[in-house]
Image (cartoon, rainbow, N blue to C red; front, side, top):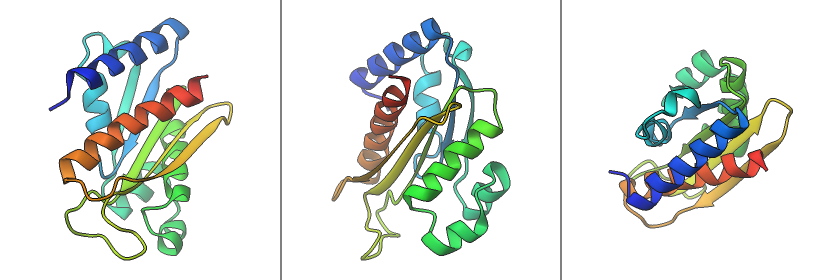
Length: 163
């Protein structure tokens, strides 16, 4: 499923984390665990990857990560603020140093005029409060392409927070 280029990126990221003593946690919705899957595809990843949360439903985001239900009700699960809350919740519930969270509309259905298919929010943060959060409009791509583009973007944000 993962391209050689994506696997190579993951391997390099894991090595950087390993050298710097950084552990990573993921909180995933529309990617359904693919970020964790990519990282754990690399042998020896257990010294970097602490754990991964797949919180596909709104209830799971609240129950597992502590995302306030009122925040989801107000903004919807697909929002920058919910992605940030997911990342914060993953840090609180792990031993990791950096968290990355992904929430979006992978399609092919489920999009609206205001939240179309291909809209994805990704947030990464570390324990010192450094955070990067981005909106991605991947547009008219297949579900698989949107999910893999989201995984690649998640690596970007982890790298950004590590700088």
